[in-house]
Length: 124
Ligand SMILES: [Zn+2]
Image (cartoon, rainbow, N blue to C red):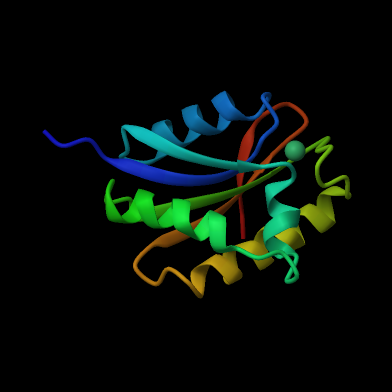
């Protein structure tokens, strides 16, 4: 039986790795999550001046080699890399979803928000 992978664009913050991995595994039919991190990933992706080359290369490996068909983009409470309020985080997450969508038409892309209590919610 082949393992199923998902791709996750997450903050580097050590507090949000396990909650996000556990939530994805509980809610989607995947075995492993390829984690691509930056400090304040949602803000990075929402910033048009930031060049996506390195991140897209990693997404390409996850899709091409691991056959991932779902990408999660995460923002979280108390983020030091993107220190904006919750409302702005959610705007950044949605902008990031749209931006990544324009490069990867074969994947479903889902925005996630990690709350103060480390609960994971879908951003719509
Ligand atoms: Zn962060």
